[in-house]
Length: 161
Image 1 (cartoon, helix red, strand yellow):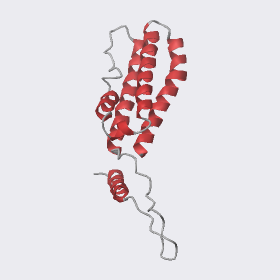
Image 2 (spheres, rainbow, N blue to C red; image 1 turned 90 degrees about the horizontal axis):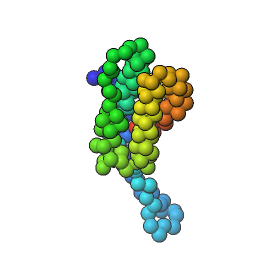
Image 3 (tube, rainbow, N blue to C red; image 1 turned 180 degrees about the horizontal axis):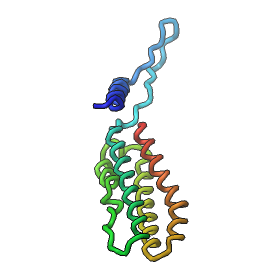
């Protein structure tokens, strides 16, 4: 285990030991009607699982870029990229829907953005394949890039808990 992982494991263990506290009025104060509870913690999301989903997504993006680059330089048939549901992130979303990540308020946004991201990727590949690389580039540098950034932002928010 490298130092970075060891440090992460220590921080994760320390963070998970924190508990909900009940405020205790001091004897000099009149007793409160009821103890005040700290807000309930958000569902515990496995940060390493989210990190794995981020890595899967980034690897898909690398394969997408390679595919797009080869699209311009070859006439041979290229293998299809996994779609939204078949990608590593898509598979993680399916598995996580009923777990702690699925309870996070941003999970539905993550699923929608993931679908949108793949629609834009498919459109960019279609434009490149039909010889309209200038249109594909415009799409990639605008809507696709915003979707990619939003997707990663939501994933990192989930990872932070």
